[in-house]
Amino acid sequence: MGLAKNVGVCNMNVQLLHELCAGNPFSMPSLLQCESHPYLQQDGLINYCRMQGIQFQAYSPLGYGEFKGDTEISPVLDEVIKEIAAKHSVSAAQVCLRWTNQRGVATMPFTLKENEMVENLNIFDFTLDDNDMQRMQGLDLGHHYLRPEAWYGLPYWS
Image (cartoon, rainbow, N blue to C red):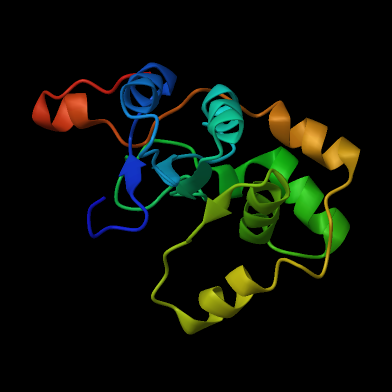
């Protein structure tokens, strides 16, 4: 055995992750980090991770940041998410983070603003009901904000 106790990988689809796991059954990754948000829910990949005992961690859980183009829509501006937020008297960002948490997905939202940090941590004072979760599930567009092919000519395996 090496010096690393746990290893994480990132930006893999089910096929690539399966090849890694099948070729290395005694040294499985403990974590897979990929883009995931209401417009890119990654259900198949999350289910595969669960079957393999790998924790899925979402980056860009609010669906924006450096990667979002000027004309692209953002989940925090989505009318369905804003309606759910109003129902629970929370922000749209809190709905997105709570939805991520209730799906069993780890995340680490990025912000430099103290008020947003506090808001991001206050997602455990409410629970999305089954209807809220179904409405959120209906928002999946398979939309990547991260596009390495357009930027660097590198393929992104969907």
